[in-house]
Image 1 (cartoon, helix red, strand yellow):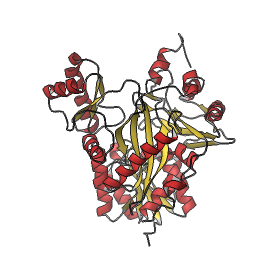
Image 2 (cartoon, helix red, strand yellow):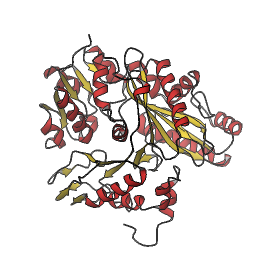
Image 3 (cartoon, rainbow, N blue to C red):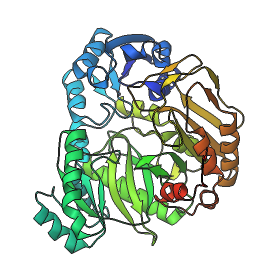
Image 4 (tube, helix red, strand yellow):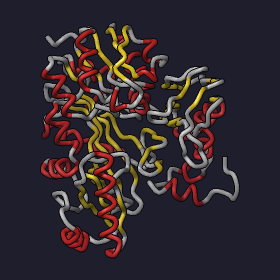
Amino acid sequence: MGRKIRKILIANRGEIACRIIWTCKEMGIKTVAVHSEADKDALHVRFADEAVCIGPAPSAQSYLNIPAIISAAEITNVDAIHPGYGFLAESEVFAKVCEDCNIKFIGPRPEVIKIMGDKVEARNTMKSAGVPILPGSSDPVKSIEEATEIARKIGFPIIIKAAAGGGGRGMRIVRKEEELKSSLELAQSEARAAFKNDAVYIEKYIERPRHIEIQVLADEHGNVVHLGERECSIQRRHQKLLEEAPSPVVTPELREEMGRVAVKACKEIGYSSAGTFEFLLDEDGSFYFMEMNTRIQVEHPVTEMVTLIDIVRNQINIAEGEKLAFEQKDIQLFGHSIECRINAEDPENFTPSPGKITGLNIPGGPGVRVDTAIYSGYVVPPYYDSMIAKLIVHARSRELAIARMRRALEAMVVEGIKTTIPLHLKIMNDERFQSGNFSTKFMEEFSNNKVAGKSF
């Protein structure tokens, strides 16, 4: 028999906290919301069974405050903590503290988070597991001389990446040797500021790749399945804007091969819980490991829509010690799903647009899902990530999914602040997007093609 979880503390905020609450309600599990002083009127606070204030508005004093979160867990007598994504979701320290306090961390074991969180160690681990990786440095680069030697060996262009990085920070593309020294120093400086760790490594840079990720589920008994791929190539400065499943270019044979590699890697490292392998797909069909996210992803709903599998429910079941209820042969993909991340930003220049929402219409109709924590009268705070909603559609075909997303975007009204809804509408109407013929350069080329004057 597994461990029965009766009450979960959600160490997060916004739409993902609400998303976890919805599944817990269906499972008959009580929930505890934690919140900063700025989030006292937030929806996750309203819909959880209990709520605890854990500190002032800044994340460092609230959502990243491990002692405050553990104290909240202990006074509310929870069995488990779900970290969501971001904040402490990939902190091996937090996972270990939960373990030491006899609170189940809904995610992989701390030592696995540690291995996959260090990008250099993750690369080497994946290489040992037989996962294709890009040519590059096997250890952090210590000097400009070492960087030059590696760059000459693998050939320009190269990319410098923060070993502890993510979200595009501590990352620099270098096309010629004379740019290497300044780029290395900048990447190290950015990495130090963002992650308190200036270690960087070098990889071969692929000019026009697609960003494809594979969703996996693994239980604590060694059973692992993959749930197909997500297309994540539409991004700005390495931040994803929209995602879809399945990818318009991944064939059943390629899906099977990428999935096989991801499943094998999970078994090699003893992974359990939900996780995602991120790959670069070259124009010739070759794919290379980029990183693994040891948590639920922002874009998990598109996979849920095409597989009919609740990923959060499975995370909880796995944490209870249950075996997966299905095998690989049971996983089928139905139709096509697209997700647009709706951010509180000016779509012209992407500057944040916090403030009070004075009017709101959430779209509905066939095949439309909205994951959000906003409401009319809600004040979007300036302290956190600018994403305020995820608009997700599902349809029989990609063509119909695009038409459905266009319709849903037109019906979604958020007044009082600026949002990226107009940008997403333009993407839906773009011929290259509609054709499925694009790469991670899409937004760069999209911006360059904009007509003179205001575009939104």
